Amino acid sequence: MKKYFQFEELGTNFRTEFMAGLTTFLAMAYILFVNPQTLADAGMDQGAVFTATALAAAIGTLIMGLVAKYPVALAPGMGLNAFFAYSVVLGMGIAWETALTGVMVSGLIFIVLSLSGLREKIINAIPANLKLAVGAGIGLFIAFIGLINSGIVVNNDATLVGIGDITSPTVLLAIFGLVVSIILLTKGMKAGIFYGMIITTIVGMIFGLINPPSGLSDIVGSVPSIEPTFGQALLHLSDIFTLDMLVVILTFLFVDFFDTAGTLVAVATQAGLIKDNKLPRAGRALLADSTATVAGAIIGTSTTTSFVESTAGVGVGGRSGFTSVVTAGFFLLALFFSPLLGIVTSEVTAPALIIVGVMMAAQLRNIEWDRFEIAVPAFFIVLMMPLTYSIATGIAVGFVFYPITMIVKGRAKEIHPIMYGLFVIFILYFIFLS
Image 1 (cartoon, rainbow, N blue to C red):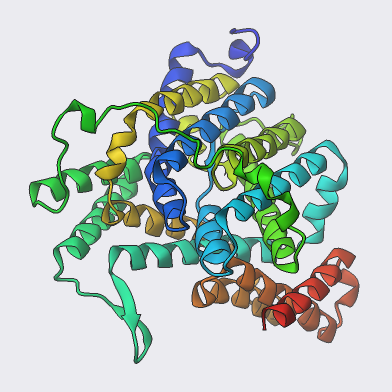
Image 2 (cartoon, one colour):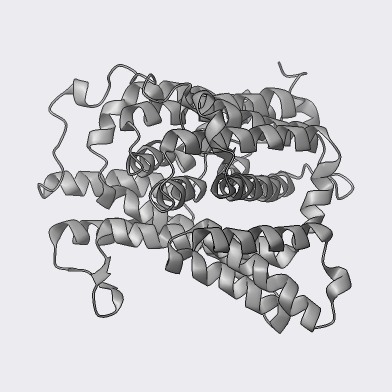
């Protein structure tokens, strides 16, 4: 075991790797409750999604640890689950079963790209500034969802949106959870989001806003059946041959592809695993991620992707794939704690959405705002995602404006042919939507 995971070469040991795996799990355990709640809004069975979330995370993380040997954990991604539920299912009116098929197909395409030389070409085709804008825009979008779910932001007929009733006990509970989580994270506690949810739940019970568990059966129970969601992605392949689904699949693929690449580089850099400015075994890592997406879709959840919270485990010494093996084990153990879904309410999970949004919005600082031809498409990507309640629409608007501003600026030669192709696709997308 030590030899396989290269403990000596990496300067690590079983105890360090175990603690790193546990730390990573605690830093991302919130997804076990946030993802089922998000996909339940799309009409999916919450218990089945809980099981699918834990299984997809365990499968993906285990493959990452054993095959790619990286201390990187995977789970259904934030932002992608919001796109799945609020943009694709609720916004575009696509059945969640068909949306799962779209996730599966995007994962299969990702596998092909991971096994071929097309990976680098696609990465280079999308301008870095637009990649950053997409990540930041998704951050604003999921933060907006969190503010709505908490009741902090509500509908206002005069101004479209406005501040909610902040004297309401449930809204105050969400605000309390947000403040506590921010304090914990500011103090450097990597699992601050998870601990913030626990503290908020306890406070909610004390003030009678959340029903406390009446016994052990309300905490630990049998694993919820995945029958309501399992295999649905395989039954709707004939429904994906539409322009809407083409855009959906491309968006799933685009976001997962670049989010994974960025996370892998960030974690590997922190762990000191980058060699000669290259990421060793990058193909294996991307293959693990794409395989997890396909498996997760078949089981019944939105896109599974690498989590930047993996840096929490690296921060306490995780260096090898054994860290991921440990994290995967904890996700399997978590399967028996599904009764907690009834305790973790939207007021408890909303702060997690808002804080993850803050983290993702940090990418804004690297966009070249001083170049107007870049600022315009980047700004529209970031702005239109929350305003149209659609990640796909935000990407489409930005990708339409990008060739226009670059051509007018005299930088047409810098535009990759793939971007021209996307320009045409998104123009047709808007025509079709109208």
